[in-house]
Amino acid sequence: MKLNYVDEGNGETLVLIHGLSDNLLYWEVLATALKKDFRVVRFDLRGHGQSPLGEDEITMGTYVNDLKNILDELNIKKASLIGFSLGGAVALDFAVKYPDYVSSMVLMSTFSKCDDHVVDMFNQFNHALEGGFETFYDFMVPKVLCPDVIESNREELEFLKQIASKTANVDAFKKAVDACMDFNVDDELSQIDVPVLVLCGKYDEIFPMYIHKNISCKINNSKLIVLDNSRHNLLVGENNIKVIDALNDFLKKEKK
Image 1 (cartoon, rainbow, N blue to C red):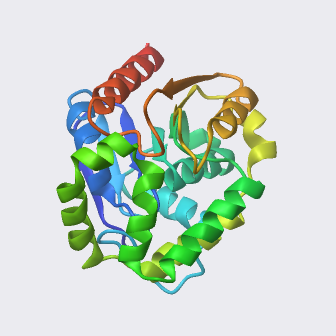
Image 2 (image 1 turned 180 degrees about the vertical axis):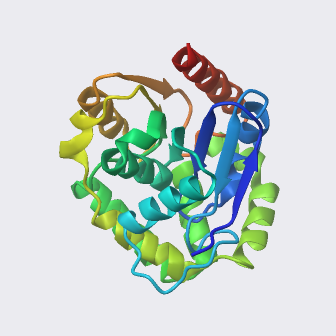
Image 3 (image 1 turned 90 degrees about the vertical axis):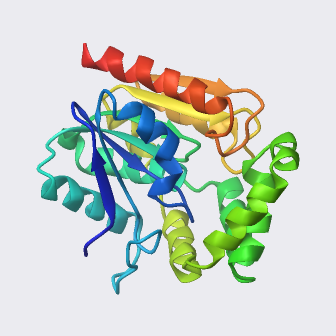
């Protein structure tokens, strides 16, 4: 399976893994900042962006194997993984299965298992997807953005919805949700022995703060940063600068 990816910059390798219904363009601001000091690889998950869905069964292991294939194709033996939401789950699963490939991780707005709350959220995702992409988009916006951000960006959000709806693969998104429903590496978190930075929004109702505290507590060499006035999507407005600063501080500290 040939997936779409972008490989930029020089230095130690960072691999950016986007979330459900996103694509590699999600990372544009971060990639532009980070590629000054690092080699930055970002790719479209199956059925997202310009990557085909293919005929394989979609599980978390499918995404993990795709990531390994990209690293092998690019002859990358070690990388720092930065994953958002679904991408964070992919990073966790990859770190458990292929620890020798991972030098550090940044986990943004993610989860390590499906408890009752997460199962309920994913059931709501699937229900919204049954109505098509635009219904799903309208459902997700207040879940991922704070009210003031929505109010000040209504026209842009509507424009983005119309653009995204032209290429969105709803079937791929449903399969991604189903893959998440079967995901659970909570008992393996203690096996992860690389430095980990956990970032979450104070008001994230998809994966609330208790989920991130659990991940950080179970991974020995980890640090948790909570961003105020944030929900699920952390890369909004001034938060971009805060996240870039946090990543640079974490990643450059690990280079020493």
